[in-house]
Image (cartoon, rainbow over all chains, first blue to last red; front, side, top):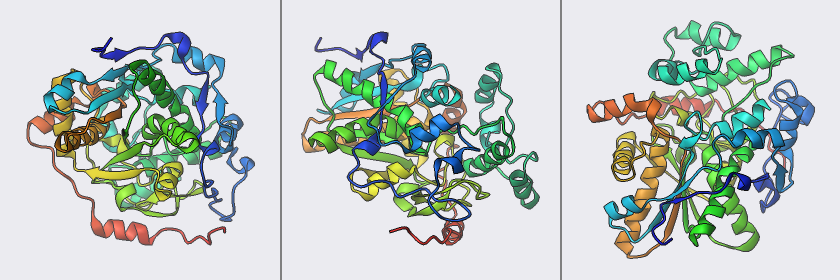
Amino acid sequence: MTDTVKYVLDESRIPKAWYNLQADLPKPLPPVLHPGTKQPVGPDDLAPLFPMELIMQEVTRERDVPIPGPVRDVYRQWRPAPLYRARRLEKALQTPARIYYKYEGVSPAGSHKPNTAVPQAF
Amino acid sequence: MVRVSYDQKPYRRALMETYGAKCIPSPSNLTNAGRTILAKRPDHPGSLGIAISEAVEIAAQNDDTKYALGSVLNHVLLHQTIIGIESMEQLEMAGDYPDIIVGCTGGGSNFAGIAFPFIGAQLRSGKKVDVIAVEPAACPSLTRGRYAYDFGDTAHLTPLTKMHTLGSTFTPPGFHAGGLRYHGMAPMVSHLQELGLIRSTAYHQTKVFDAGVQFARAEGIVPAPEANHAVRGAIDEAIRCREEGTSRAILFNLCGHGHFDMQAYIDYFGGKLKDLNYDESELAMALAGLPSVAEPA
């Protein structure tokens, strides 16, 4: 166990909620302003551009935002992504540091982008 | 698709077409925003700011069309937090916890994805983490930009958000990490820097590719040019540990592989990769053009 390279989670452990940092911020974000009036925008101002569900995710202060079942099902095509311990890089650098990297290149597109593309399309 | 990427990354384009997408290089003549830019400069390389204007214009004009985006807004950052949540569980399997977290930043989404769950844990329980955002020196919104209200796009169609910005009319030079070529930073990431919860640093692209190649030769995975920024940051922190003789745990996000960007590696090996500098006078002009906003108290 001490020389493990990849830390792999089972599919069943794909998180059931995203984490919303707005819930824990010591000071809230400055408001978003309307480009014309320069007054804070409300959800209806954004409705021509975004689906309402995403607008609600944009402004919520809830800490845990549930991941819809169908999105979680698509996530299963590549998630959970592996976490690596970069043992060979550590050796090459002769560093006492413990280097870990989360590898998001395992998605179909080869990057982290589908993590948001799928829920936005949904 | 931003013109310079459309031309530099034909395989990325082909992948999207394989999934049934139609890709149009931006600036295009399909929108007012695009036509205005092309009238001034027919060979304009494009920018994310211009592409966003074109997409927003089309979404606003059509009831059956919505705008999907790759970064910056809170809900996109939210979706990416799955990266950090999983990492936290996996580090628990390893019996470890990060002292340092490194991510690359363009609009801020992959960085937020890896870092936010840990920053949240710090805010709730005081578990201290040193969080570093690494950005390209040619498009340095966090390290050189101003924290101000600005538009997310060039044609000023989007709402105004307070963020670190180089000015919405700023066109970054065409360096290889296309995903990091954006004038602004996610408001939430900017806010964290203002609160002193993260710090930021910038590197030129040759130093970034040095790190990527060193990483590939040790670990086997060839990182995307964007991810090479995070690799550089992580390697430099590991070297600092060696010099100080301290063993810290460093976590970084390898946000994508580089298989679509091998031309960038070919240029690097051919000595053709230049450390592009942005145009100081253009930056000054873009910053001078920031909208004036009476800040709500």
